[in-house]
Image (cartoon, rainbow, N blue to C red; front, side, top):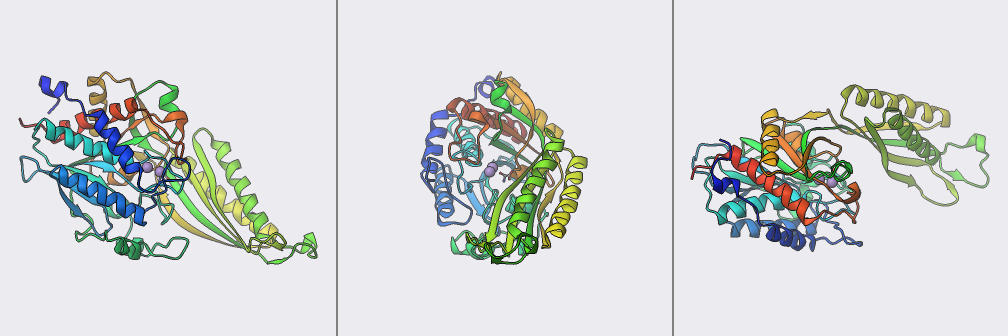
Length: 419
Ligand code: HGY
Ligand code: MN
Ligand code: MN
């Protein structure tokens, strides 16, 4: 059912209320430079969940929580047998994250529901607001963990055993913050899923677009590589006798950059984490652990990069006399979103006369996994300078408002207004 009546055509969200909620939530887990450090399953994540739950209660929603801690707050539909339309994203942040990555998608979903309540708009399908646990994957890898369990990509027991760099387990931390839900993962069967997210790249702003209609996303391959050499004295060990794991890590960073640049702009590659031990100025590093993040929207390129990484790292290890081990942290193919959902979002942007363009998401999102179990699609708003995963991440009121208006139109289009 598309947007017919004038009421629907004039339906706009309350942008000031949305912005006030964004700023209120941004107070929880403040960073050191104006952004946020609200990592998954920390006390700060628990505080943000409590605030969201209060807001959902005030909006008259019924909140359920599943065994991965994902929150589902339902606005009832008129047809009790109709499956819910899910809208949402994530509240967890990077250690030096911004105020809007994930948070905009959750609070935009809340604003859609608040607006429908204000106007007493009734829909056939229920609408559920979702906060997915551990989208970022920086504390407990891989990213999009809870949505991955929801989509059957990961076993819940495997997810529970994921550990952070202090050896704390995901399952134990979920219990500790009091958000181990009583519903089985998958207790909700979505009719469709829509996610609003900041672009986290420069394309929309450079093209003066308000909306990105996301047709799909890059495939992602995360690997943790451990090199083992031999600690020895930096002063008295001749160069030809060394087994320098730190040197190996540095060469891997150069290798990853060379591989990705070979396929640029259709690929990216990063070594984001280095751990060199014993990290002493006058000891040759005996062990080094690095993480490698390879991405491409082209599966052939992604597979070629993975192969070249494997061959190149083994050669580096052999040349330097190092032992090497690989741990695959995540491995997902490029994503293509549901055509009907994408068309619904494009129709909503058109109806609002917002300048928009099709885009492929560079970053990973929960919608990538939910797309496996329900028709899903995303919209994006620009972010200043394309900057994200940086405390200086910023968006304008206008961008937040436009994205939320499109989310609202699309959600009620699929949820079907009945009054
Ligand atoms: O890694 C990603 O793309 C997302 O930010 N978790
Ligand atoms: Mn995100
Ligand atoms: Mn992120």
